[in-house]
Image (cartoon, rainbow, N blue to C red; front, side):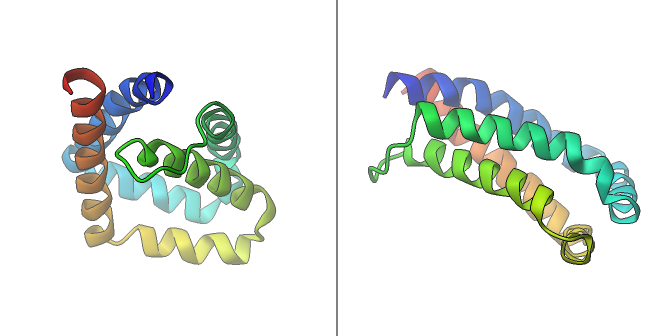
Length: 128
């Protein structure tokens, strides 16, 4: 559990800043996603980072127990899967996903989700 708390204490501020950034600069994020739609190869660095971080989390904390720390395991597996997906999926699969993600409602949902995730992880890693 201490490892999960440590990972959560790192991820919490990242998710909080990401969520706030998306809320405050929605148009800039939409422009970035538009660029990714046109050239999804520019996402390879992000995909590599996601795969790397996901693999580290899964290797360090892969505990499937029904408690708040399950979030850490799920985040690790999702990051690993996304990284692998971006490397192996053809562009004809990635472009429609990016187009879907670039809808304003979807972007706001992602921002709120990141904020909630950051608050929950922060609460349990710093205060509980």
